[in-house]
Image (cartoon, rainbow, N blue to C red; front, side, top):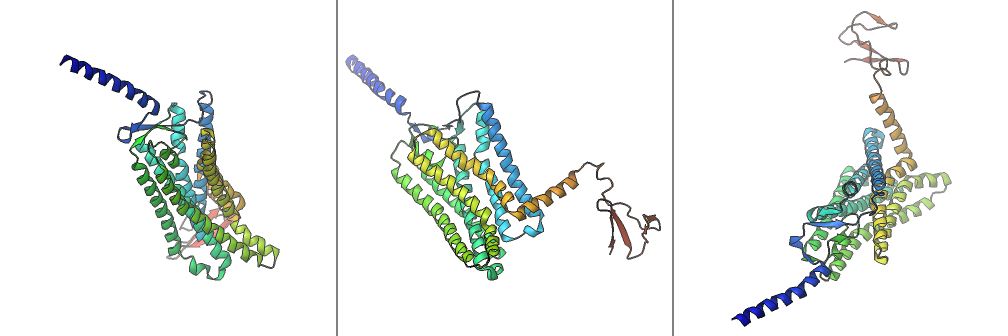
Length: 387
């Protein structure tokens, strides 16, 4: 009996000595026991942390402020209540959500000097990132179709691009974004173990989560690639087809002024499309051809941070309607929030319905009386009939 007990102890010792190095080298971890993963920081230098924090915080605030101004300018100006700017306001809203998915967590990690994120939070961040990215792509396609109908079928524009179609295109864009997010989640949730919990990016990128799997993920990568092609390449093909038809119609215009006017309506959208797909392709091929984590982080930052930041500037600088709407919105906001002393004499004054005279104008109380409104900001006296 003693010999058997000694052999059992020796067998357990040998088994533990062989199993322990495997755990230390591979760091294999069951998904059910994984509570958090670790993101790649932008820099390990403590002196650069405040600089990076201020840099990304300013970029995030500019992104949110710029896109909010676009939305407010469009909603406050009745001249911009048309289909093209309906898509643009929703695109600005999607850009706010797109950048808010990644940057706030990055700022919190920089401030707390921590790279950890919960596993559920990582899946949520990945889902929102995919949803907003796919919806952004679909909205750009819808805007390209709107320009195609406006230029190539201008006589039937109001019939084709009716409000119901615009709302349907917006709903389909968001639904396809949710569908792609759901498919990616189903693939990631099938993973049973991770060989490491370190993600080589500053947020939970979908492709990075697959690389953590300890099993062969070739089939999952093929499925994800097919999904990306279906919901990424097809919108890009639709945009390319629309602009081919647009250019063909523009070249048929005899006058140079007519060609410039027709193409100027597409300049802002074409710039945003080039920026969106340029940074997206740069990130995709950069991660495929380079193994450096730094290159992955830079490409992802260009796609997730810089792209939403530049969109409001492109539309405000290249689109005259947006520029004028922003100027009018600024004037209205300044008149509302100006100091009380500066606008004491600009408010509606001297409302009366007796026989007293104000600046040579009388108000007489009758069932249909005339009320004199004095607006010294324009030095004009206007009469409105009270009914």
